Length: 334
Ligand SMILES: NC(=O)c1ccc[n+]([C@@H]2O[C@H](COP(=O)([O-])OP(=O)(O)OC[C@H]3O[C@@H](n4cnc5c(N)ncnc54)[C@H](O)[C@@H]3O)[C@@H](O)[C@H]2O)c1
Image (tube, rainbow, N blue to C red; front, side, top):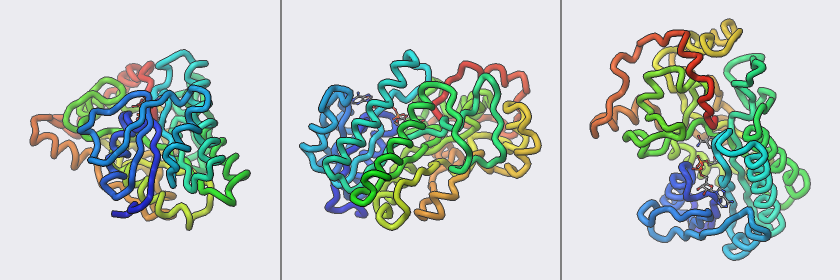
């Protein structure tokens, strides 16, 4: 019961990630208010969770809902979460406005802890004009180079968070986090992921996970991360951004072998990604917060198998290089 007596308002609480965050924080003892344009089914959440329907793009709505519930913390998830799923200017306008107005209202109303969701896409991988980092694993020190409206809007959300840290960091604590490709509990059981295919299909065909550089995270691990972040925000430097990913890659062979087939020129950079190492480091969250992801596709899919889903038949199967071409157009959030 880590969050006893603390009220958290989660925007986008009815979404893919939001549902696990709302349920996880409620189970951890927080009083949770979910604010979303949509209502989640009642049985999605433990008893006591308040759901409020609101369009946070409407003038004054962020301020109205935060003022109504006077939370100790705001976690801002509401967004258009898939690149190219709407016209570029709509994604940019929606996500940027939501991030600014929600963080502004929370700041002006004196909310003590304010967290916003960003995305690993800020780094710019997959850019049609080419992309190559200086090194792997990628970390919070890797320079962001967003190449589409979604990634740019998420980078802007981080900058908004940093702006308020500079202007109001004496009163409130701020943070941003970049969740990797989110897999919710039902998706281990075979429900389609954000990209329409199943986790099993994503594992069996490396071209499906390649656009996200094989990153992923269990939604419940993100909820655990946010619980720990809320507890420790007062004791870490203000205004931090964190990658939040699984401890391994969503791949059946080492990324040292896989990544060079999909990221041109990355061969010598990926040599350290042996075994099950992911392309994204979570060392900062481990070091500053003591957070550890507890779920892996290796444990979660084998649990799901008992319910009828089947992991890839040959977990060491090579993926032909030609499959890299299939990844074009697979616009993945992280
Ligand atoms: N799912 C991922 O793999 C992933 C990866 C990286 C970052 N993220 C970020 O995490 C957050 C949550 O992503 P998700 O996958 O749960 O997305 P989602 O689309 O499932 O959920 C987003 C929620 O926001 C709500 N929303 C959108 N506009 C709103 C508005 N104007 N007013 C009120 N509610 C509104 C939607 O109704 C939806 O329930 C987003 O900010 C996304 O960019 C997600």
